[in-house]
Image 1 (spheres, rainbow, N blue to C red):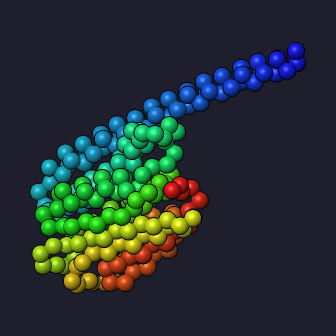
Image 2 (tube, rainbow, N blue to C red; image 1 turned 180 degrees about the horizontal axis):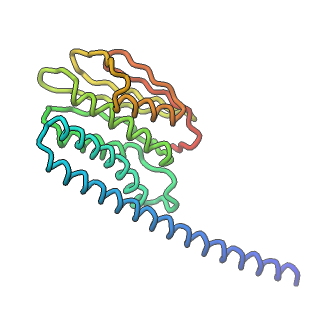
Length: 219
């Protein structure tokens, strides 16, 4: 009798826990819908302001701001609509970075070939989002400053071994000028993302190497 009673109690508790879990998932999804909608609203306001500006210098700044916001929005969109991952905890890095990089190529007037290799790597959004922002800044810099003749080739390779992740980014620009303005917004964002991920970054000409120690990765 005691065993039957305990089984009923366990079953009842499991039902209660599952109901609470389903409710939390619904609330989380609703929260992310609201975040996504708010980001879409902000993007609309930035675009309105962009079209009201005549000076190319300031139009370029607003366009950069737009893509930084889109980088964040893409992460939340993937969080909302990822399939096969009920809790939405880990996300496909290749899919995420493809959205960001292709969006930059689409607005560029330059002939660009992108080689992106981040296959079979899934990361928590707290790690994936800073990486996305980092790649956005590096690629924006290449599209703006790289000097080439016919085609700009951009290579992005991300590898994961146990808890170590390495990002190698380089472009085929024929010349490279050392950035003296280390206080520029782009440089500050890159350094901030590396610091947030508790990593290191090194550069040789137009090649960047970022090394990170991760605790929330999944292959």
